[in-house]
Image 1: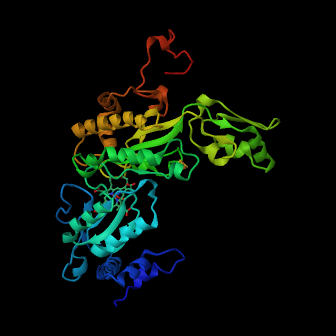
Image 2: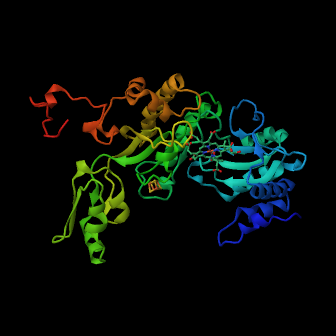
Image 3: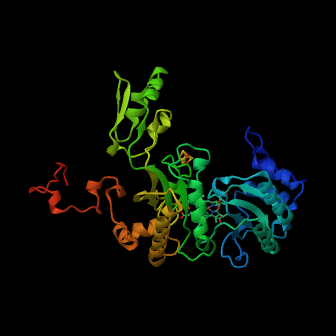
Length: 405
Ligand code: SRM
Ligand code: SF4
């Protein structure tokens, strides 16, 4: 057994270590053993030894498998081909042990036995197999009820927060939405045909547990359109426990729409000023709840750094109902229009946010037939998408509410 002093350092802390796990796998798998050697060498030389190769995949699919080769196959023959397979996640990553055993059994039979549960897009990631094993692996996973996830210039595996599975904050059923919408767009997921990748993430509320706003081209974030519900008896219980309602909640509300009356110990909200940020609910979950009319806000354009820079997604539909299967239809239609516009106008390797950035929001909104609304921008009165009618102005050209234009 060869020594791996640098990797061993990563086993010394108190946290679980991927090195320990790969060493365990190496008892059975020569590929896992060589993987440790390649990694140790990369750490010593400070350079990677992996490269992309030719296109590898399964019949009828364009994505789901990432070709990986080591750059010195003669030194590391067992990882000369070390391809990654992506499998579609079950919504919220719920499994029973039988299913997990099935995944591991198929993978140990044909691949390295190493998994990455889960990749940060959401897939079940199976690390390391040879080219001639890809089709048999896929066939067995198909039999077991699995399908490939996304890779390449296609829709990537949609992802959701655990939502109503375990969380009382969820404003819509993220698990159902993710499952239903993934099934609808299987073709877009498996057949790369766009300028670049496109991701959808479903978060049940503005806590955004999937970080969709920074990590997906389309964020579907749960919200409500009526007013926060406040249980005044529960507010009094917080006060009795010396919780600082004024300092911790009202003073930190980003729009200053909450008022706490210290005499009556009542909390009140100006509903139309609330941006549904979740701060008060997070701080006082027993006293403050979302409204009753729940749905989702649709945002577009989030992504990582390549081409322009990292973008956060921004609002294009302030509120969409998401209660029943029928409610998903307008969302699906919207996605089709968005992808069609991007496919027509986007340059190669440009994410949708970058195409919008280059051509302008006005063109984008026209292209996808969505009316501009004030929620799309940070300060509606200083934005280029909201136009004032003469009726909105007095004779001096000042808006009727007195604000400067
Ligand atoms: Fe990624 C490229 C792995 C999630 C942004 N990503 C790659 C490549 C192809 C780079 C490479 O050649 O080494 C990696 C393939 C590795 C392989 O052999 O499998 C790679 N990305 C991963 C995974 C496996 C990391 C992980 O272990 O979690 C994640 C996918 C697993 C899964 O399907 O679940 C993974 N990549 C992400 C995320 C996070 C997310 O999806 O939530 C991002 C940021 C969000 C975004 O999409 O912008 C991300 N990966 C990128 C980018 C930059 C894209 C951009 O527009 O700026 C690249 C570069 C590229 O595509 O050339 C990239
Ligand atoms: Fe719960 Fe909101 Fe997090 Fe989803 S995003 S798990 S609904 S707190």
